[in-house]
Length: 267
Ligand SMILES: [Zn+2]
Image 1 (cartoon, protein in one colour):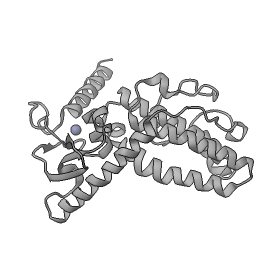
Image 2 (image 1 turned 180 degrees about the vertical axis):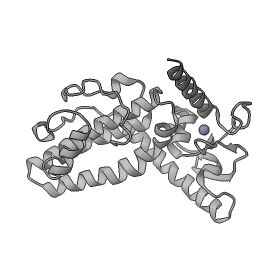
Image 3 (image 1 turned 120 degrees about the vertical axis):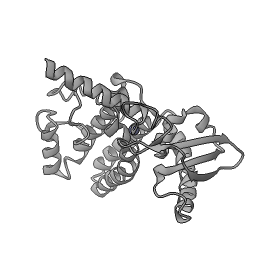
Image 4 (image 1 turned 90 degrees about the vertical axis):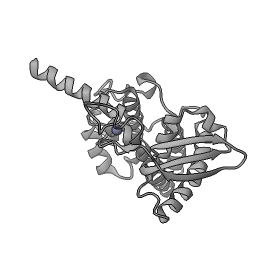
């Protein structure tokens, strides 16, 4: 998370009472709202475990949160926007604001049991002062529907995962980003969230969704070409004259970076 926050403009650096809030940065996606709900549960559980001096519960709760919710879901799913979106894109900045909030809470909650590491991370983040002089974060956010919706999507992710595994065994595809997935969804969540966000959630290049009574998925090899920058197979790859090897998102990021560099040189 420190790596992902290296270029995040923190509002109120040196003022730990006023960290940048995702709510001030822009619109969050489902996965951002979900991880903040999970963080809220973690804060609540850790505070009550500390009150009972049940340190093993704190350790277990934080370890579970880091290994499952953060590493294998949130950070994995947001990797593409963190590395490939324009540095200042609202979607990337929102993710950083969310990560900043998680980082801040994790350091404070870990401080009593991982004293030196929590302090080292806290100092590195330039939050100011010592983590051992901070208070525990307060649980606050009331739950909206994010957790229920993500549970539905994770169930569908399991269905897609099985279909992809079969396709891989049959040598139809090599890696997941080569798959064109047709998902028959039995959940209305897939109607409420736009396709691009679902492709990001499932980490897929090419997804078609039909509503159905029963959930199932089929996989073929996508006809789209691979973008040389983000490795996703996208319909726009090959259509640009200047950058035939890039998708539309990556082309606009590369062009904007180029303008930025030219401006700096002429200045
Ligand atoms: Zn791309």
